[in-house]
Length: 45
Image (cartoon, rainbow, N blue to C red; front, top):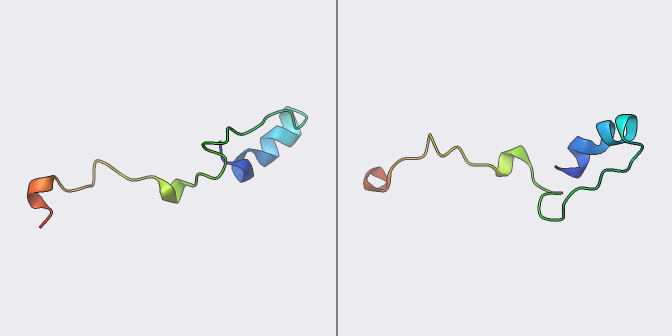
């Protein structure tokens, strides 16, 4: 989970014991793609 997103629940519920995985700690929702909205290869010209 992103560090900023998990900051509050980590502090309030887990006594700051949660640690974000290195692979995802900086991920943002804006980094995600919406595969359902992407055009198939045949339309992408």
